[in-house]
Image (cartoon, rainbow, N blue to C red; front, side, top):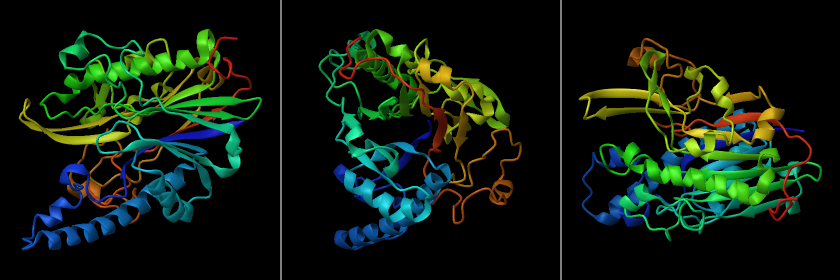
Length: 382
């Protein structure tokens, strides 16, 4: 039995044009900044209209990337509700894709903006009663034994919730074969400080360690023999890829507990310049210059059993939905506007900065799911 498993941060698939607190989407701000609206109600009406138009362009490209990916299972991030997820699939994905999806799952997590992790699968892949979904949004640092001094120094208490969004466990049961997915979206590297990556690392490390606890709780002593995947935007990377394809050591990422003698990252077998799923260009105050870096933020981490059954799986990273400002080959020596804008390697109507499919690339791994899976249904050791 082979499955194409995909993870994709679709970037703010929401039913609102504003987050709580009055913060508007960044996509609407540039155009609105050029105009002076005499009345707040007038500005709000224009903002809503602009948000709808921009969202339609963007979601056509998001759906196009998902259609090209042709995944059987989707682990998604930044979805605000079941209603928005179902509407997106019905009105965008199903217009383009050869697959029809269902088995949708979105549960309320801990994100202050209300963006959640979500699941979808091909309708004909499995019977509805064979899909089990469990949220761990209420799990605390103390409950999963992941609180430490670094967290305490940040003011994090043992009774606080460990996951910034959730670790959504989705179990699929085909009788002879079973698969468990642990869907995650770890703490962002941006906390408003100059060195947000380092400052937020203890939280991601605790989240990663908490996921290992949940896997072992579910499968007991035979967790290595079970079929499971940790999927999602983990917001952590050890090495970045600089201009020219240079490998840049960024130090600890926070997700080491998932990688050190626990799960296997199939992307590790790729040349380092092919592993990226996200691109960032920013002004560095410390270096007093612009910096560019490709990086892997999105993961499909395989259990030891799944990795052994799939020593060289097919890996697809769909990049044609990225804006033209993103060099698709980090080794490209010419990153000028003239060179990048003249390429024919994006979807129709992709822009220099926007519209785009997302700020992340869909990652898909094609896997053979072996028969049998260690661990009883209630997580006790056989």
